[in-house]
Image (tube, one colour):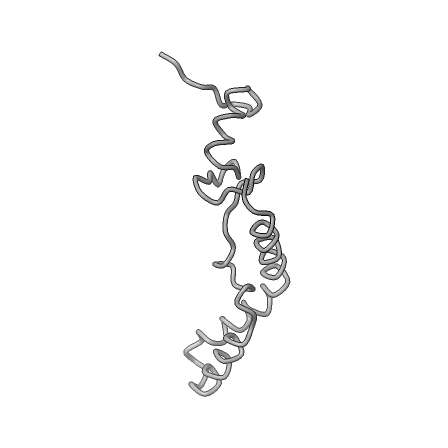
Amino acid sequence: MAKMSSIQNNNRRRRLVAQKADKRKRLKEIANDLKLPAEERFATRIKLAEMPRNSSATRIRNRCEVTGRARGYYRKLRMCRNQLRELASQGLIPGIVKSSW
């Protein structure tokens, strides 16, 4: 099980990303618009840099919903490989059967 502080920090980042997504998107559109003057684009880049770092979506870490583990993560099922194997062996995940031959 991951540390609770790591899980809570990641959840805090998710909330901040959702909260600041519109503003960040608008600033990025202005900063990347080559039709605007360079001074205006530069000023927009400064405003973008002044935003909290954790409001960027790249700061979010994919974590297992069951344990909070960050490695061995399956996006489709939103869980780590360990829990996937354990739950699949118990038959709790529909459509997944442990193979044997």
